[in-house]
Image (cartoon, rainbow, N blue to C red):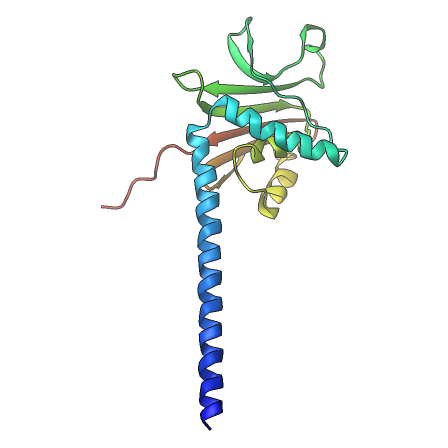
Length: 185
């Protein structure tokens, strides 16, 4: 009888420790996702490009091509861009533009906009470079909305992704959620 009680106690102790360990692991994952996504609110172009280029390199090893991003100033429009067609390609229907909106310090990202023919791999890398972990929900969101003419919006860990367009032309906006919803009185 004593062995039975000790066995039940040890089993309960092991189960309790396992549950505590899983809880701590879940909390660590949630904190990591929250921290990385909230860091997009203060992300600089240098940090973003570093993340993007790392993802681009990882995809290149798998044979997947994404657009090369670098911060440039389009002097005609005075807009900052990560990617835009050069003059000879600007009128091309398949042109892709990736603009970046900067805050007052001209270093911190206020938003990123992809506009042009759908390039799913570049769009995914663009979103992942914000610090978000890619999920099946985001995958489905991208797949469904590239044929929706009305804007669709998804907020994940303080990053807002908005997509609208047709199968031949899409606009994807990625913005940090900076304002918190008003609290009830």
